[in-house]
Length: 294
Image 1 (tube, rainbow, N blue to C red):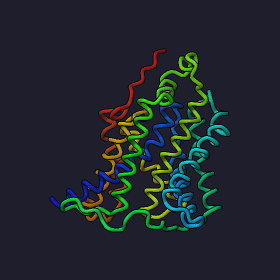
Image 2 (image 1 turned 45 degrees about the horizontal axis):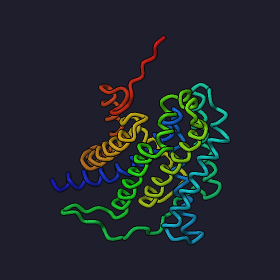
Image 3 (image 1 turned 90 degrees about the vertical axis):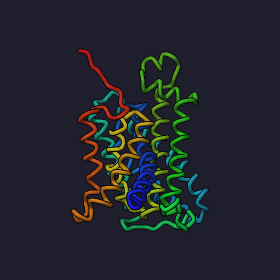
Image 4 (image 1 turned 180 degrees about the horizontal axis):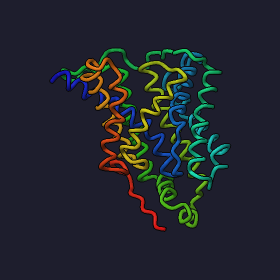
């Protein structure tokens, strides 16, 4: 029972980080209906920028964290204005292919600037493990979960109560009606890309602090995709719940099944759960059912 609780709580904490990264998908999709397959690379770039600001520049972690937020927002703004803005009105598959190409470009840029080897982060959290009853959590996982939970709450409140968040929700619901009501739809697109890049980069810092940063860190974005689909592509609550489900399932599969199958089950388990849930909920747990009338 103690092992089960240990795996459960650890999976819950990791799932919180997954939820934050999943917001990188959701925030962009909610306003633009675009699935950004470069979200993993945004996450990786955020990790590298934090590494550079702390190791090369020598900034304290707090200021480096703020530097990553500003840089990520600018990157999202730049990509939307220079690339995605020209894809408005184009077929969805064309836009998706552009984001896939963008992920390869960001990967190549990272290898050129930082090289292909692993880079370890400095200790940005206290090293002592966090003990909750009989459960022992690594400090970087615990504090990473705390930061992720705080960030998710801020994004959720922004979308629900802030004027700009309401404008983004209106844009996602009906772009033509939003434009007629005086909302600058193009600005909402730009803002959604900036916020999506910030969310992914914050998650990248936390993930990189656990296992180091390297150009292929962005491949974790493929692991996050089941989180997004499980929750429903445009649901913040769904991203959070999907993150917890994937994190817990992944941890339990790794703890109980990997020893019998010599590894690999942990990586496959989230996709198995994804398929099973989609059999009964094709639009995800909180996704909106879309009906097209011809």
